[in-house]
Length: 87
Image 1 (cartoon, rainbow, N blue to C red):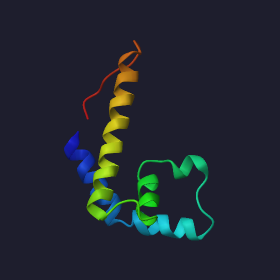
Image 2 (cartoon, rainbow, N blue to C red):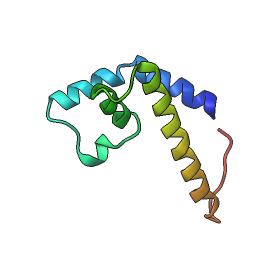
Image 3 (spheres, helix red, strand yellow):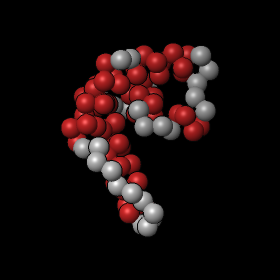
Image 4 (cartoon, rainbow, N blue to C red):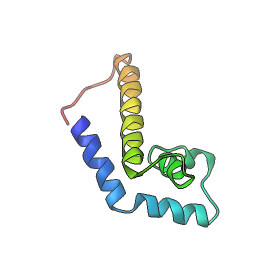
């Protein structure tokens, strides 16, 4: 899972997530829900100078993604009707 999150985070950043975030902010900004989404929230913080460099941005996105995965997995385990499939 860590390998997949790392690859996905790199792909999002390489494909212009930070630039997309800048354009959205310049065009009027995000709704509360969209602005809190993993990836956008960290990019917004980066653009506001809250992180020292792009490496910290990457690490924050990865960390928050892993936290979400843990919360979702815990929640899904409680549902008897959940069917687990291989990735």
